[in-house]
Image (tube, rainbow, N blue to C red; front, top):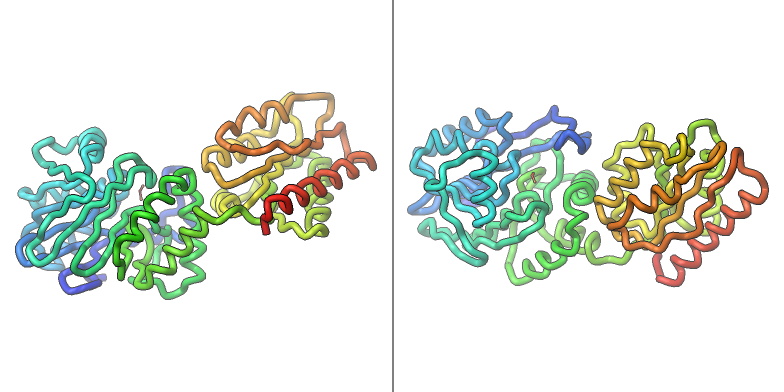
Length: 394
Ligand code: FEO
């Protein structure tokens, strides 16, 4: 695929990674991903915005050659993570007069991570501009999306925003622009849930700041380009600003069927009371799906058997993940079964300090559930309904 024109003098020169199935050795990529790099040819200077994952170095260098690039003046590093910065060293080797433009913190991180010499950098402050002749780049510092050094770059004359990871989606596609909104919405929500959600309060501020910019195109560093920016801006606004919904997320494990019986009963009791439940068996769940469900849920109920004296390790994983992702959850409860005793509730409660939640009366029983246990689950379902109604979670 040749460089693809977005505006006069503005080209996509990225790489599509159809086969990658795991990111950070943690995040599933069911649809692959892309590393988008953009070339901007001004009347006097040429800039490259972000690079690509080191595994795709030859793809980027080849596209630059195809674009007839003889010289690069500036490599704009919006973000120091290696899937965007990792090919800066070979680009500097190929175009030795290029300078790396980044935030002061970005410079420190790029020196630390990629051993780029200090004299290669130009650091920019928030709101600073850089002229390419007939095109002007404005740098918008945006810390914590999702690293502390990040910035967004705005191309004033063409009204194009290059936000790096923000608004991105892990989606390998030949489409330069979004064509299948449903598919991109799901991929972008997965991306938001896994990468951006822990920083949703910072992102609220960044979205407010972006209201001051006229934006015709959003060109992120992963996934297709948005030629209708309102599609992704509105989606982000709803994910970061809207109150949680009348939804319960229920990650669970059952070893011998007792916890499963409780989960099945509670799910039905909640459904009968009008609550949507998203249930995840943690032996086989795609954790991206669990993360997506956490974006909107008001309540999480954790279902666990007792191993020795604590929760099942896969449930520990789910609790740790939910704690790290800092969703908008307001309530948590724990249900499950034990054989001879245990401290699953205390241990799980200790694992979720980031979640500012009210803990609803857990239902922890001995052995297989009996009539009184089902009644306790009914009571839990009633409490969840009441709490959601009190807060108008619809
Ligand atoms: Fe796509 Fe934070 O790197």
